[in-house]
Image (cartoon, rainbow, N blue to C red):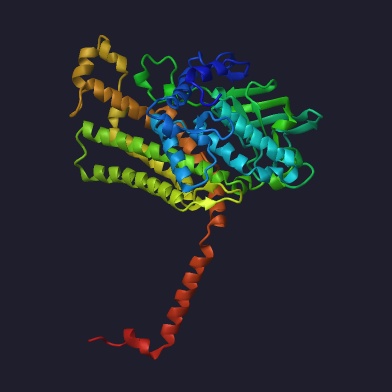
Length: 500
């Protein structure tokens, strides 16, 4: 098939998936107002691959079918391939201002990294490596959209999953000739309502003990598989808003998040990638280089988000004529600094790539650790700055439809800015409100904090994998030794003498 159109994608969502939200089951996510905006956004992203001006930068020729497929599926073999992938991903990230964190390219990079590392999965059975390769080719050739779940429900974080009194986490409960049977829950499945496939992989450390082996698995299934239920959080925008301009981000970019519950779901053996193997599950993302490959995508998203927030701040400052104040320039410079830091990390990651054991090319992980650990704080500060610059203008901004209401003449007169009429100012401030004040903004803030995992554990991991620790300790040791030598040398007593 190759790249799909948006219409083909939307038609594919009209299946028997079980999506629950606000007490009811949604039969068609493409028509339900709580989901329709994001579904159409994904469709628009897929349509971009067909645009004549973009197709060469967003697709490549499949090595198996000869069809055009999405470039985010590529198994990069050079630094040039990393740059090509970055350009392709940037088109999607810029189209969504980086506010659609789990757009299809994220999981495309994720699964492509696993496929390149199929030998890792084959360590406990050659069939598991073949399964991963076959699944990757399936999603690549059919342009499928994926979601994933990694973590167990928050129940008792003081005990490992196999020792928790409440047995709620997804686990293997049976094995048959047809496959493994899974029962329990996983979270957090972002984009679940809009995905064709769900990838279920390990996240936290799994003990190598009999009780823990039930939790050491990895597989993928169609989201419409019988026995799978998705329980979605409520939407983060008023779906009855009178104008798209009142919630321009939330109404289009609420990718939603869901808990998935497996009620004795059969996973066919050909869809199993990890089977009762803590050795494979633990450290999977480092061993397969999925970490830096998806980190590359995440950094590109972060840059798009930085540029959007900087443009927003600059626009507000000009609209109300405050850009000449030194403290405002200081805040704008903060966002500029974050933006250029993220850009530099991407360039550095691509400029010093790593060749994996399988001949693929991964970006340098070290610069991407900077974006992984640092961007959440950067983004939180950007939101704070836009709130400070917009001030009461964000608190009291009316609906865009007021311009055409009985209050229209009043709004036209009193909502003007130094630069721009009332309509322009309302549109700008509604956009800023959605990015920095609304429920959508709050979800973005929390999501960035945990986007790539628990920041405390990530910091610990970064400390353990940082490559220059011994070199830098030796530098300090050498400096102290040199200072001691100088202190014992009479010729170095100049500092005790009165200098002319």
